[in-house]
Image (cartoon, rainbow over all chains, first blue to last red; front, side):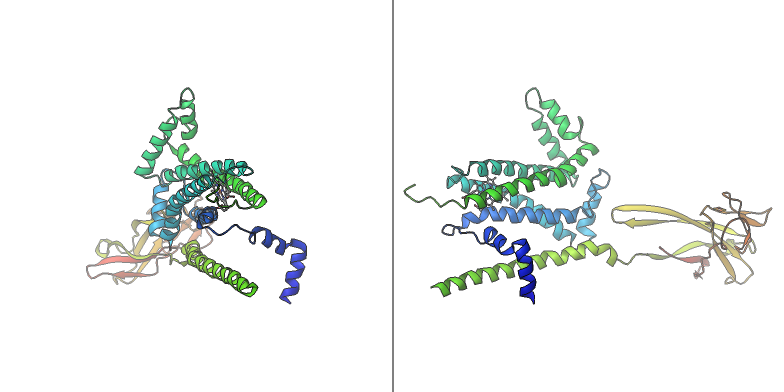
Length: 219
Length: 164
Ligand code: HEM
Ligand code: FES
């Protein structure tokens, strides 16, 4: 009975092929460093899920952002857990993505034919940092307010274009409701959408090229 | 060897499944409770609200009172004003009618007018008797009553209030 249903679906959806190509790929001799990409992917999914849950209570407005976070921490069942995972997961993701990048660098896996995998990876790393930067402002507390003040000021030191960049980031000359709102939009829509798209391309290339072999002493 | 190989692969599959399931449950179950949290909260706080000293209330003359309640919904506080009239019918301190001054038509506040001997609503000219009965105008039912009240030992009239 189940077998029949499965076969029917498989014939139309190609489930077995999908499974073989996505999850049952041949790998070179196992190495724990090669799991860091999957770890990055796992963390991205976890951040997405916990982030979606946070938006159920979070309000991106200067007069409610801080209180709504407070409410998540103290008023909602398991709010501390959801926010805790998202908070620490953010730091962990930056670290894991960075170490993944280091391992790709040290094993020289960025060479032909994987240059585009590497370039897309650079984009993924920058976007991950962007997620951290925009997310940090959202609680709208003293630390996040001043971190963003300083961070956008640094971006504003770019020669010639600095002033324009600063205003574009802040949505005006000062940190305001506009800053919070556009950081929120970037944090929950634009950057994740870009990340998801690039991750798709990244994974496509990994499946296409297969995992590179670990360099031996002779390499 | 092929047997062995298969076992190792199956072991990894099963372990991945179990660990994945555990992580899923450890996050998924709290997440459901997080999402449904407001539905589990018992809304409707209750309180006894002091209206005034019974000695200050003239028999047969509506005694106005008002109070404010602050409702907290998550991170938002809303305060609402309530008001009413306590009307003693006789010497018996239990013989009292307590009306809500919110007009039963569209919610304006009614006022007691001595010369008309009635509650008048400024919005659509409704008229209520001292007992709260509709005498004139569009309201569909009499003024609401605070049915639950009590007298404290030092002669304060209190009404029972429950948030909706
Ligand atoms: C959101 C962040 C990222 C995710 C989700 C991700 C995901 C993955 C996954 C699942 C793999 C295959 C397993 C592995 O080799 O570890 C991989 C491989 C690879 N990644 Fe990433 N990655 C991310 C960021 C980066 C960054 C920042 C770089 C470098 C700038 C990069 C460059 C590469 C390259 C060149 C490979 C191929 C390695 C090989 O074939 O040996 N990735 N990535
Ligand atoms: S609200 Fe009182 S008469 Fe309409």
